[in-house]
Amino acid sequence: MLKTAITEMFGVKYPIICGAMMWLSIPPLTAAISEAGGLGNLTAGNYETEEEFRNAIKAVRTLTDKPFMVGITILPSLRITPEHHAMYVRVCADERVAGVEISGAPLDKGLGMDAIETLKKANVKMFQKVGAVRHAVHAEKVGYDGIYAAGIEEGGHPLSDDVTTMILTPRIAESVKIPVVTVGGIADGRGLAAALILGAHGVMMGSRFVSTKECPCHDNIKEELVRRQEMDTTIFGRSIGLQGRALMSDVIRDVIAIEEKGGKLEDLIPLISGLRIKQAWETGNVDYAPLMVGQSIGLIKKVMTVKEVLESMVKEAEEVLAKKNKMVV
Ligand SMILES: Cc1cc2nc3c(=O)[nH]c(=O)nc-3n(C[C@H](O)[C@H](O)[C@H](O)COP(=O)(O)O)c2cc1C
Image (cartoon, rainbow, N blue to C red):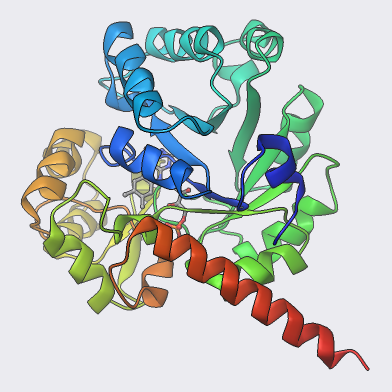
């Protein structure tokens, strides 16, 4: 048994959390992860109306009575506006979800201190995903309950400070008093054990959950991630001020070529639009749109159920930690 500040805070079996995943972190996957003892994520940006968002929360609750997180990404978007962000916060408080993962701008800067007060009053735990010590210190100061320390290895949008998970976890753990969760590059029990040793109280994964039986994407992609290795992802989007990490593919090569020629956001949009990404997940065509996975794909050996992933990770972490203990003589 692993008992950490995260298992205690949420009353969950395992300190393993799923990150926000646009198009994928939807009720079947959310509930499968929570039901298996981790913390699933319901990604708010999948829902454009309050009714759809409330229905999604209800759908998770019909599948599990266990806690889950809601992911709210506060980044510039053509589809999801500040009004959506405010609605997500209001509904999360109203529905008393267990916690929120905020990425991009912190709540106080994105929506104002009222948003923090609203969530606090409803006892919704607030975690900010950060890539730098200064952002973690800020989140603690304005009242957050925990930090997701996300290194450059992660799939999605790692901060352009480019600090690795290995350094970021201990730097943030020594800089704040609230619990820290390691994000980026974790896909097995060795990573979980390492994160705990570095000072974290849990781990968050995205890519590993994509290659699970319950993930709502095409099987081709799950198998492709098993075949691909740690060097098969790349950073793109630096030239437009929003870097991302995605699977190396034909479309990413095209995106990078456009960036190198000085192309602007409007030149990239046709290749990287959210709807195009949605279609790629559905059809299984990895060359059609950027698939935002991280270097941790090098550690994925097999498509498994969520329950198998969580159980095998915790067993392996416990074995690794016990073995390391014996090295101290
Ligand atoms: C397919 C996919 C989609 C993602 N979408 C989002 C998102 O919408 N918002 C966000 O904050 N992070 C997003 N992320 C990042 C994850 O929440 C998490 O930080 C990351 O996957 C952790 O690194 P890992 O992939 O090495 O496990 C996404 C990750 C993946 C794999």
